Length: 100
Image (cartoon, rainbow, N blue to C red; front, side):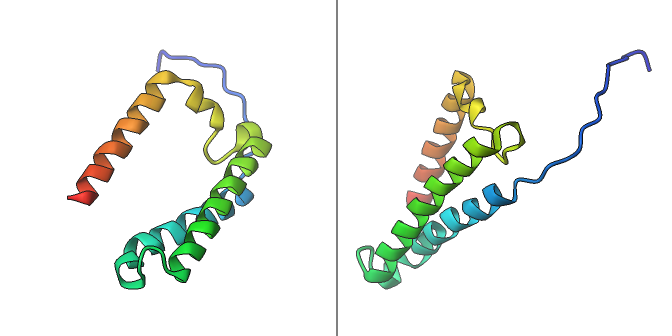
């Protein structure tokens, strides 16, 4: 009731290209993580999934740079050292938990 902030109304913009390229990048990598033992880590299916995943993630980074402030994950947050350390720690802990 006492906090009076100036509000600027903006039209919401959905980053469809970023969302699509993120799906194209992450789903094949999750698929090979799930099926790697069955397929073999160096099989044709695994290698194809790796390639599609890497190309999809590269396209995602390109799409996010192009989207600027309306990006799904604004890349400028990675300039903050605290965020990078926290994300790196979370990645290491997640990798250690799934390896066990």
